[in-house]
Length: 357
Ligand SMILES: [Zn+2]
Image (cartoon, rainbow, N blue to C red; front, side, top):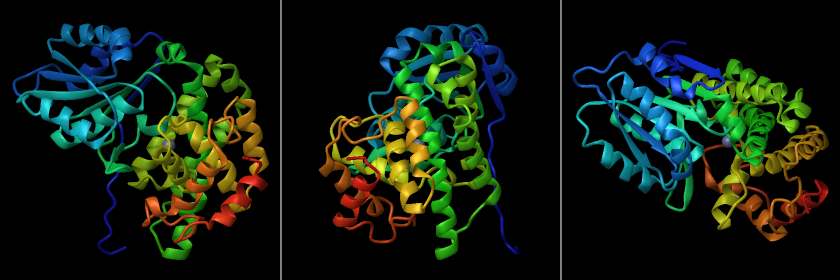
């Protein structure tokens, strides 16, 4: 172990509760203190719809402490949009923190901007659709490709369950798809360790797997959208993000099923939700790994998540093309797809065996 240094950056405070958004100031104060010279501006990054509903709650609560609060609307999750947002914030000489308020787009842009500007990042998700709410990576699109940019773990995560409950059920169900993908992501990681000697963190891997098992045991509650189901899902999303913090990479949370999801996102104009695609990918990658893929499919079915190309609004050729190109999206990430990826013939066979088509 000589010379081996592994640094783990974790969130300092995770708050989950009902109607807590308007109290963000008191949690903020505990973690970051009161505004002072050199740190009294807070930027909130949000989408326009979410901002209309929730921004004033956040602004009022932080203004009460004496912070100067400013809103930036994130238009998309591209690298160039992130640069634009950074440009706006870089005029601030007194930046105290960046808050990401919303879904994937706002969280990722805020996280990346905060990390570039060396400011603390506060994650305030309004949907339970993905595990980026805790992770130290920002998923952005650049050069026509999805890229995972190293950023910082949030110093604090505020999850208002009353807000998440108001989100469209489709988004919260998608979170289940993202989490179920850890079954194959962890297998891919182990494979890369065994075949390529890649670093493998057993503890981080177990934590990611545990989040998948946790949601698997509560499918019906999550499907029904009960408070208990939502809480289980949120816990799993947080712990999967923590697994990435511990591993120092997205490895425990993202494998071949994510490469497939990214490939589809690159190929179609209006792609299904990230978690829906990851769920679909997990069915196929479980088959390749020799896991119980029928069980994965039946859980997704119970949740009303797409289990066929048609249900996801995709045609066979797109799914096949995505499977063929998946391995080339991140060539350094070794998975069950191998170095060169699936042949078209193997991909066609895979979609038929797993009844995606
Ligand atoms: Zn994901």
